Amino acid sequence: MDQIKQHVTAVIDEWINSGYLNEGDLFVIGCSTSEVAGERIGTSGSEAIAEIIFDGMKRLQQETGVELAFQCCEHLNRALVVEKTTMIQRGYEQVTAVPVPTAGGSMASYAYKHMEKPVLVEHIKADAGIDIGETMIGMQIKHVAVPLRFSERKIGAARVNAARTRPKLIGGKRAVYPEEQLNNKCK
Image (cartoon, rainbow, N blue to C red; front, side):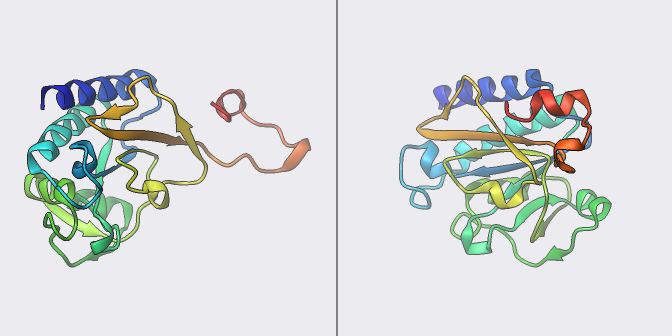
């Protein structure tokens, strides 16, 4: 567990120092605690591991001002746990289910139990996110997703992928783009 805490801290520090997150951004977390534990996804969920990751994500939220969305597993169609205020502010539609470790996953279950007023929504378009254990968060990210290569590539035994988004570059060869979009389009 100490190694998992160290990995989470390193990943969260990289996100905080990246400059990619802005207050009010929606940040999606997909996580297989089984993969973090070194097991196959969906076989050995752990709310103890979920607690460590949740605490790291809460620190990310406190230090950057992002809103969090925790993705459920496929047994709940990858619905997302968000705060009710997030759902209302973004115009999302609530769906009815309560994530549990065996249907939703340990991470979403833990988040649901520890958020202030959690609700489930079916779809989001996040500004950035992290995928711990290859849980397929791509369906939750806005276009255009830009993969990030942080130096910490694992949490426990699980591979970590991260992405941010940028607005689409439209208009073709005669279009003029803001300099920051051109500089960041392929990083």
